[in-house]
Length: 583
Image 1: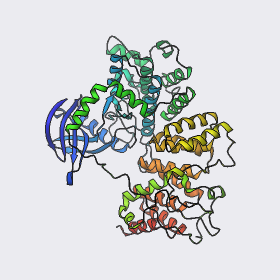
Image 2 (image 1 turned 120 degrees about the horizontal axis):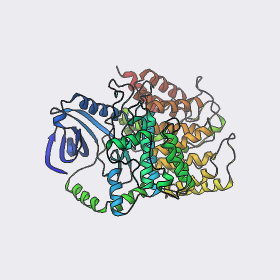
Image 3 (image 1 turned 135 degrees about the horizontal axis):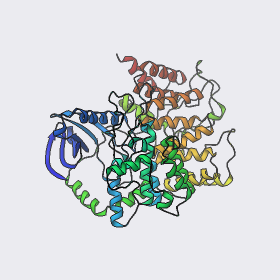
Image 4 (image 1 turned 30 degrees about the vertical axis):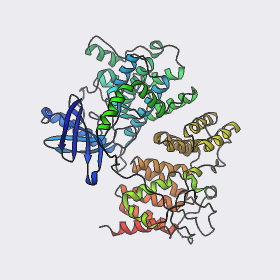
């Protein structure tokens, strides 16, 4: 690393050069603001002597445009992009940790190879991030068809806290871009390419799946998959998918692991996993079957053991930097509880379904949070007018009045969340053992969510159709901020019960915090059609995500419906007035 002292770069202070690559250089920097606000970030700038290279400049701009669309916990977050002092730059989140190439090298040097369960966990997080990117849609609902094209150890970053991040979308492409990779032009690191990419053929998202399979192969077998005397020899082997089978490279592994590796590495992409979500599901099922319970915490411990000396040096460096960490956007506001009254029956509101009437609003773990996100986005000052909810006070649960659906003011505290949830009559009866595990998990969820997660994983393994177990597993993942897995759990609930409004409501929340507003809108729309007792809350959140997409007319219509359901919902009134007052 090169010491800079401190160099002003617009509103940023460049403090230290961290790395230099073939196209760009990376700095540790901080953003400064009024009243002493500071935040550590990373600044990536194109190399000065390449500033006039049109193709490289286009690639750098493409990276920034694509990365700005991606909001996922397993993809590095982009904060800013622009041109300054004759150079383009990208400002992104600053991460403390190492890339996978460095980790594998250090593991070999110190004789501490990555365990099978951590290898599976790392790849599961890569799959989660890629599945999100591959399925990302624009605001019109059209798929962007993003392909990373360079999934390799250098572009997988693991933080000391056990987070896994995909970085560098520098050669990624979206179908809508005007600049596309020319036929026959090879980009990416040869040893981690798919056969079709190495042959210069057209590729799709399944090329990223092959590259991800290479990472899993190398972490599991502790060997390089493609080797050769020179570049051309390696390229020839990659083109033919000529590698030592994992069963030979490392003998004695469970058959499930071999099956996952081999399916991800099929030469014919039609025989491969057809999506990263499919590969992720197999990995999770494999870990459950093998009683493996990796987590960000266990990965963090491995990182701290492996890089103890480096962490000490970096910690000292951080101590030398006086910094006050603040989020770029506020993410937490004190919960408030508006006054609750029973409205008169609105003529246009669908009838409440009987099974929904009995559900506690405490089921809506995500309901309050998405309302708060919406308030942050639109009208944070509203909350100052409302009394705070007393600690421990839970929202009342009452049958819906015959004159109309019961109004919802705010979701109950999360500690109440699923205790009263029961499977609908359509669901098959879960085994007594699975139900017992679920009940144990409910009691542990607050004090020991990791143990609760383990119990719930066992429960759903015993009885995959246990709706209560799947739902509670989703809420535990939310508590652990493992949003991709929470999404998978709630999707399973929705698959088991297409009328499960609570699962779709929480999916709406999860998509919203990932800024996938199109998917969030779809989920809240489903909740509205089911017309649960918290219909006005669902309509309010639907209006919020519609507003985020610029759908002003639809947003106003949703809010007007919410007000028809509950004329006393002050938050709806104020947002509706604000939207109608905008030019």
